[in-house]
Amino acid sequence: MTTHGPTRRQVLIPLDVPSAEIVVANAAMAVESCNRGLVEACSKLRVESVHKAWNGVSMSTNFVASAAELEVIKQWLKKVTGLNSTVVVEPRLLQSKFFLKILGVPYWGNNSSLPITQAQVEAIIASTSVFEGVVLASYPCIIKASPSSDMSVIWIDIWDSQKRTKGKTLINCSFNFGQHTATV
Image (tube, rainbow, N blue to C red; front, side, top):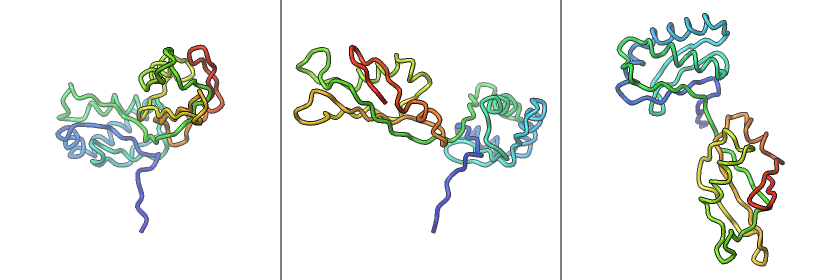
């Protein structure tokens, strides 16, 4: 038996349990409200259904939503009757994890007696323009390239769209890692 997960044509909205129940109880109003906003924004996207799923609400749509359409859904979903005005509504598309390998990084840090740390790698990734907008899904994994080598291989796991748009743009990019040039 095959188990099917969510599709890219779903918008996930993490909400606390009482807020999710309010939205699901007023599902017809939520669909109508979001679709009214999408029509006013001259979008072809339409919300087809709303149901409780994955610690929040899942909205099935006829197309994959863009960032502008997610913003419209965010604004119009807040108009659902009974939803507290302090509830944070952050619609998002499904994401997948994507592994990348970084080469050309020395295994030994600034102090040659200690290897580089995950915190150092995370700090350099956060400060490098190549990784702008990239969110790490887990801690970097630092592995010595070979027992006799002074270089390392760093594996990072990032959150990316299911089309892998961020990961594809990072492949074969070079950036400065201290005094060295690293390649993804």
